Length: 134
Ligand SMILES: [Fe+2]
Image 1 (cartoon, rainbow, N blue to C red):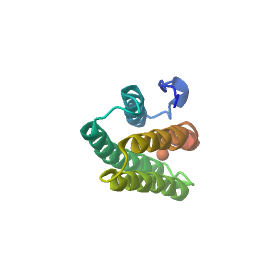
Image 2: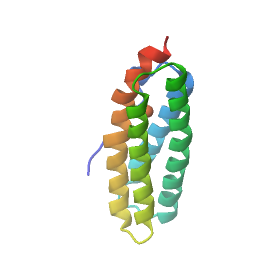
Image 3: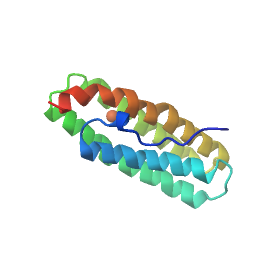
Image 4: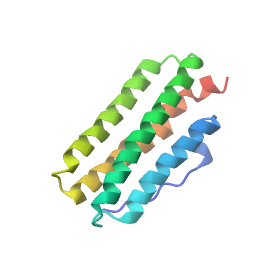
């Protein structure tokens, strides 16, 4: 599988420093997963990364939703539903992890982060930018 690291770029800024910082940290998680390689056998590190991802997205999504709410963002419900989808997908991967194939799990996780999370930051999150900028 070939996939490139995703570098932070000013075009990804949603105009709110604390949310940009969250997004950078999530990108770091994705990049470190790629850098560690899909076949490397380190179950504990992968398990820790999944736990970090769950905990951090929990904090980040709550923060972002509160921001949208305070600023009267009209599509909050669908944005919230998108976040719940991601949380559920991460939970499924965590659930499958114990008996599962580690390499497969890593590939699934990389694809989820690439197809959903990075896409989400670059498009769905951009939609609230005009609102939070005032
Ligand atoms: Fe979001």
